[in-house]
Length: 87
Image (cartoon, rainbow, N blue to C red):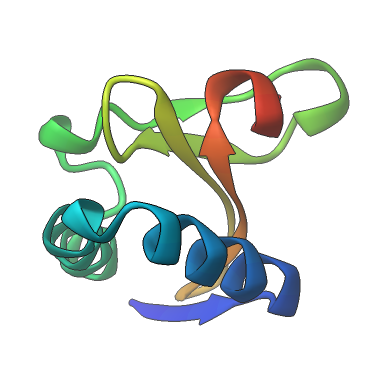
């Protein structure tokens, strides 16, 4: 699958990784797993409800999530942040 991050995602990811450089390795690993299989069990991918219905979230860390949507063979990365920030 192809990953296409939104500009807002890239901006937030850059800010998050600058503040937390220890997350860079985990972020790279999650990115590759998403590209290969967005429903890899280790990602804990789950569908969202309410205003975010039709979108999915996966775990970067215990509290950090990546929100994305799927269309054809494209994964659109929408948001990244803590559980409270992205939901």
